[in-house]
Amino acid sequence: MARTSAGTSAGTLAGTLAGTSASSTATKESAAVTLAGVSKVYGRGPAAVRALDQVSLDAAPGEFVCLIGASGCGKSTLLSLVAGLDEPTGGQIDVGGRVGLMFQEPGLFPWLTAAGNIELALRARGMGASGRARAAGGQRAGQLRAGQQRAGQQRAGQQRAGQQRAGGRGIGRALTRAERKARAQELLEAVHLGGFGGKRPHELSGGMRQRVALARALAQEADVLLMDEPFGALDAMTRDLLHDELDRIREGRELTVLFVTHNVREAVRLGDRVVLLSSRPGRVLAEYPVPIERPRRIDSAPVSQLAATITDRLREEVSRHAQ
Amino acid sequence: MPSDSGTGATTLAAGFGGLDALELAPPPAGRRVTARKVWSVIWPKLAAIAIVFVIWEAVHLTGWKKWVLPGPGVAMSNLWAQARTALLWHAIATTLERAVIGFALAMLIGSVVGALVSRNRPLRSAVGSLLTGLQTMPSIAWFPFAIIFFGLNTAAILFVVVLGAAPSIANGLIAGVDYTPPLLLKAGTMMGLRRVSLYRFLILPASLPTYVAGLKQGWAFAWRSLMAGELLVLIANQPSIGVLLSNYQDQSDMPSVVAIMIVILVIGLVVDSAFGAADKAIRKRWGLV
Image 1 (cartoon, rainbow over the protein chains, first blue to last red):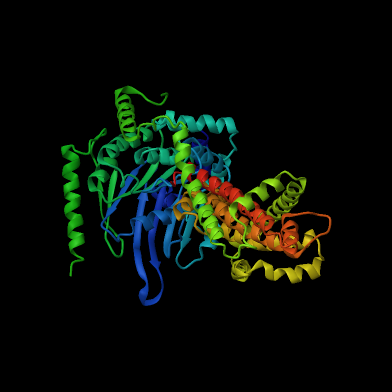
Image 2: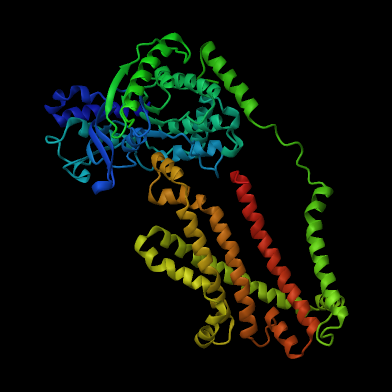
């Protein structure tokens, strides 16, 4: 697949360019997402709100990381930063490859059919790359923007991300109309909506819309999928099926997922690792690897057990905020 | 399904299939347009017209100003008589031609101005309030300027029609751009839509309903400006609705004046309801109603 080969050549290039510094950051090199000391402050002066404080986090390629925390832990802020929709106040974010984002609301375009929404995503793929490397804090992000000739001075990850972004443009070969149509149909079938391509979003149920949104995110050939409480508004039955669906879709592809939720069981059911964030400001409080074999069930004993442990820790954190 | 394998996927497909079938409302039973349905839409309108005629006739029967106020019967038979002359149709054709040209120009100018203003922040603070000012200014106040500038000709009329309609159209587009849902903007940005493509594939389609509302309002202003213009700018040998109205006024021919007024009302309503239908069709397509 074009995506994989682009990624590989980008990695090799980055290694060559980065020289000796590459070996010292070998673990970072292999991470799909790296957050180093990321802070985000909204507003200025006494009214300023510190949403994120020195958050450092890695996600390996293909890893499923769930972010969990009580209200005010800056989960959604974190995803916006990784998605590049917002700039961090301090720290550095490296993302290898293309980023897709799913919200609690499907965010489909109401004037297009389900298939039309996916076809547009396929078409837009060639228009701009969304993989990015950004940095802030002390240095202006613009100076650090990847692709600049500062190989020796910058962190290897920065370079890698930059090269990958350049590689990302390569896969943007414009698909023909017929190719887009065929690919959209494939993606719809992958989310079990093969027969609903001609429907408009308002003609579908909430769960179906969210599956179209998933297909649309997949259409972007994302290497990193950011999911912001994507199943939060759905009923339990639909959510269970979508969990299975997500497992199945990730089979056979290296899709890194950052999944924000407030549902601890959901986090344990899905994640390779659960990261617990503190509230106001958001900090990484604890990390829990999830050593449970797949396929998992949300109501199985091991899932419940680990979820209970995490919930206790979460309650402890929440009660810290009581007067 | 090509990507499915094993029993797990099969049950997953079955699970989704079952849920989808349960969640989707059953298709609406036969959307046939029956005579009963048509009648249910039409009768309130007919009743309203009938009530107006009854009141009109009642006033006429009291004998109040009976030398100058014709009854509905006289006015309608006058309209019928005029409808069988070529003059009325010629006048309607002239007026509608001006309406179409003027509105098309207003649409072009309004859309271009709206698109530019919505994109550009300094331009917006400069021109934004000016547009609203233009919109509130009675278009008839432009005629002395237009007549001196263009002379007594069609250009003067069209100028005022465009000035009347374009601000509403521009404002409609600007409002539509402003109210593009932030969630869709995020989604579009994540897809890789930028600048021009973001406009073409997201912002412009998203602003369509508001734009059509602006067109509808623009039409109302254009039609008013056009009638004012035709009454003020009388062009010889070119019968228009305004010319007819003005002539009948000079002849103190009240039944003909009322008949022409009915024509003006009907044309305005028909075009307005066409915009209304377009608006409704868009909302239905988007699931907003």
